[in-house]
Length: 213
Image (cartoon, rainbow, N blue to C red; front, side, top):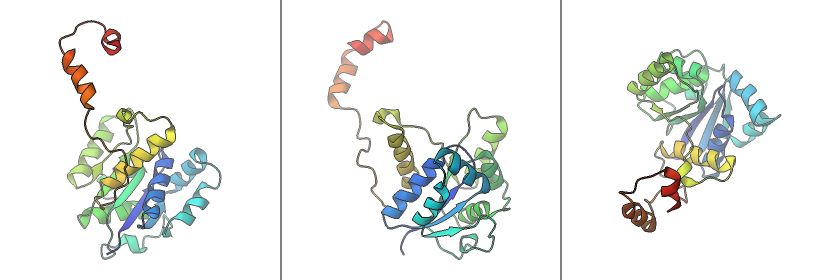
């Protein structure tokens, strides 16, 4: 079966990550089903730019209105390879955790859970209060994967675009589609660096001094 992935974009900061996820999936032959919340559309326009949603619609295989509870992705009989919600607002996370399928994005996520498919939630908020944390625990217990969009600084990104791309690739990796999208995967510390670390393992003094050695 050709891979088919649902991409949800809700109303949290980081809409550009959802855009990148959709771009990467489409570029690798994956059938994409896009659903964007009303707040998500506003965020797209604010963070990506005017007309962002219109451009995004053209890149998706299928676009589903947020209120279309009768859409194909609302049924478990419609087979998919999983779903990514990027970004996932706390409102969306809480609704998923409580099984409140009051719009198509939440219903599609609920379908992934009940069918035991992978659901990746790029939960975007900081700092977190107890309600946020409890919702994350509840969603995880139900089978979701909580993957906050945290930059991988060990990659030494030079631009915001590199940070976004790395987060998007990581989210897609979590669906286990077999796509090799990352040309710079972690392969361990370089031998030279390991040698220097061992050499100075017992050093004492200011961090700045040790870094300079």
